[in-house]
Length: 470
Image 1 (cartoon, rainbow, N blue to C red):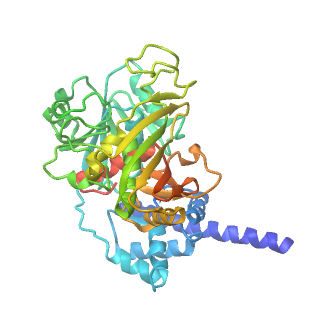
Image 2 (image 1 turned 90 degrees about the horizontal axis):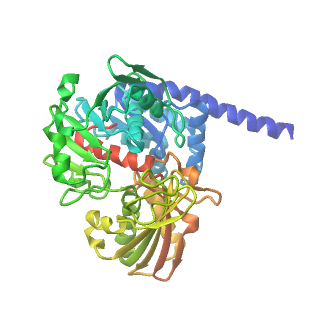
Image 3 (image 1 turned 90 degrees about the vertical axis):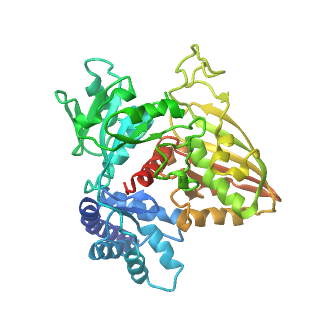
């Protein structure tokens, strides 16, 4: 009994020691080379030794077992030796690749890292957030966390309406504290005189304006900025073009579905629409981003004849806290007390990213009294018969090493609930244990953090637009 106890404790201490040894390497790669290290998309930058161990332990949920921290140490040393920069280093993906090859982990990692494309120009890209609500503040957190050597995307300013004498302090406080996503990881200072928020050394100019076209960003040293409009106030080309009339701007991203002929981009699916000539790009909706990658995998493998998407969605700021007038049907009733049946355009919006599914999907949504994390239930009739284990394995493999591994996550735990997915950076997470497959009929449950997962997709859009890696 005592020997078993001691062995377990020694094993734990060995893991912690390896994690502690890896942290300086992770930090140097991040600060000096703009390399973001992760385990199957879960970032290791600025994490404690315990969090690093947990990330390696968590990998058993989708890989064949717990990741070996000694392999991570080896990969980090190789990355530093080779001088890789301006990229992401996912040791989980490396481990999965090595397991599928006939090479040792070290041999595979050296070959894979040496082949990385490091031609990205070391020219920073200025980013401005127009609006600073739920999505705006999460985008700020991600951009600040990925600032690294300052050679990638740089958050330079936020533009908001002035709400009074304490506006700056209150906005800094909302960035510092979040009831859903927790405290900001770092330090935040406020320079009232300069109207600046300094977060982990990132100097963010706070600009007050009600008119996108009237802002002169060059007065603040900002040039060729990408404006991220997360207000939702303007959703067509005419309205969003107002941003391009401002001095110091170059392109615009809308964090909502666009209207008219604007490209609605689900990153990983149709991001080829982000051409140098595309001055305005929209990032679709959180639900469209969550379901489209999963639907593409299913459609490519089996063909979708038709289907229905039912979204169980956390309430949003658009709803009333208590019963009151609302121009939308049913949304006037208390969001905190009711399940509210409403419509969603996500099913139809899928066709903008996957034209082959046009007219094949219907959709509805139920708003529920939770603040974050939603679920999409895909009820599909396929062209071919399917079995549960096969489709689950397809999704699991896609989440590990597929082209959509940044968009699709997979889980098969019998104990997970919605709060377990807060902060997940994938567009959607397939719940394998809930999958139902009978003949040509498939029901698949897809969780998604409708705030952080969606914000991560917006970041990927920005990365491609700016030819940078956040």
